[in-house]
Each structure stands twice: as C-alpha cells, then as structure tokens.
Image (tube, rainbow, N blue to C red; front, side):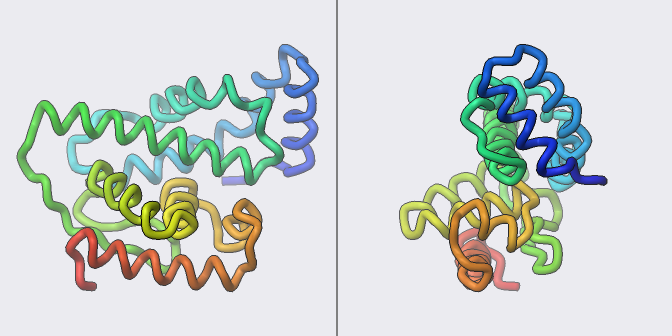
Length: 189
C-alpha cells in the first residue's frame, strides 16, 4: 500500500480548514487506500464470522471523522484520529454482536512485536477496549501507544511524532504496555 504524500495531505488539510468544499472529498480519495488497508488488517484480526467489512468500516469511520477533519494537522495526526474512529466503530459493532451472542467470549491474544498488530484466534475488541480503558487510568500515554500501534497501524517513529515524545520513549511504553496487556487479557506468552 503506497502512502499518500505528506505534503499533499497537509495542503488538502489547509484547503479543508479554509473552507474549500471539494477538499475533504479529495482528502478522502487520496487516503482511502491507506484507510482501507488499515481497516482490512483490523477486520482480519476479528473473530470468525465477523460481519463488518473493511469498506463499511472505512465509511463509518469517515462519517465520524469528517466533521472534525478541519482540526487535523497533518497525515500522521489524521491516521491517529482515524484509528480512534475505527476503534469506536469496531467496539460498537462488537458490543452489538456480544449482546446478540454471548458464547466464545475468551480468545487467546498474542501481541506481535514486528508488526504491532494483535494476532491470535480472533481478537475480542470489547475486551481490548476495556483493557485499554483500564490501562489509560494507569498510564494514558501507554494506552495511546497501544491504540496508535494496534488500531492505527502507526510505526514507533510515527507514534513518537503524534505523541511528541522520543522514539526510545515509545519503544519503552510499547514494551511495558504489551506486557501489561498480556497479563490483563490473560495471555502469558
């Protein structure tokens, strides 16, 4: 997946802020492939039989994000906010599914160092969301790092830029947050 040029994204965001009506549509068009890739990876990590398709996830996240796109600074900030919107869509969908079907609640989760994604026998996003909320109460930045890495697909460097801290700080936060999540979500590996 080819990343959109950061300068092009910033120019489009400037146009959105200045009130150009077609700028948001142009922004969505050039970022769609990347958003679709992130959504595809997130949906692939879902439980078997998950019904929300990546395209629907992108569209629903965009509907939640669009009213606030004029507040976005740059490409990395956009993907940080988009990851939060996708998280909310997936959590709402998972909660709805959970209300309908209570079986098979506990899934084994493995945090993959190389990709920053969660692997395993399907990810229970409601459990992840609840764990992230508890982690945020202990250390908000650790929870943000997990969200950016797992749900936003951002690299260590991009996460550092979004949060305004050093690369080493994010590496340390990521290591600590993964260890905490492994314990919290019942996975010793």
